Amino acid sequence: MFCLFTLPWYCKAFVVAYDVARCLLHRATAGPAPVSVLEKTESVFAVQAMLAVLLMAPSVCHSVADRIKTNAFCSEILLLLSVYLILIRSMRTGQVSAEHACFALQFCSCYLFCCFWQATKQHRGLLVAGNVVRLASAVGMALFPVLYSHLLQDCMHVSPYALVFVFAGEASGCICSCASQALVAFECLIDALYVRLVET
Image (tube, rainbow, N blue to C red; front, side):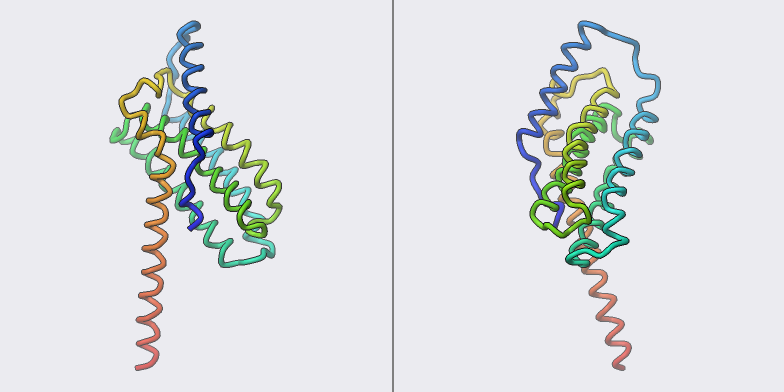
C-alpha cells in the first residue's frame, strides 16, 4: 500500500501556521468575500489533478523497474483523487460546507504529494524521473494547501473540527486503501470463477 503514509507533523504545522498567519493578515486588511468558492475550489483541484497525472504519465508509457508496483501506485493515486473529487461534489450538493471541504483539502493535497515523495524515496525505480517527481511533489506539498487556504475568509484553526482536518489526508489514504483492497478481492473472485468455469 503506497497510500498508507502518515503526513509528517512539520507539514501539518506548516499548513496550520500558514492559516494562522493568513487570518492575522486578513483581519488587518479585510477584503471582499470570494465570488464563487465552489468554482475556485474545482479550478484548484483540476490543476492539482493535472499535476498528479503529469507526474505519473511518463511511468505509464515508459519502462520502469517494477511494472506491478508502478501500476499499483498510479491506481492508488487515482483513487485518492477520486476521494477528493467526491468531497468537492459533496460540497456542490451542500452535504459538506465549503469551509470544511477547503480545510480538509489543504491537508489532503499536502498528503497526496507526500505520497509521491515517500513512494519515490522508498522505491527508487517506481516512477520515471524520480528526482523530478520528488522536486515537483515538494512544491505541490507547499503550493496547494496555500491555494486552498486563500479560497476562504474563515480560519481553520478556530474551527471546532480543526483536529479532524489535520488527519483528513490519512483518512483519505485509509479510504483509498480499503477501496484498493476491495478491487483486488473482486479481481481475485472473478479470476477464481473464470478458472472454475474453464475447468468444468
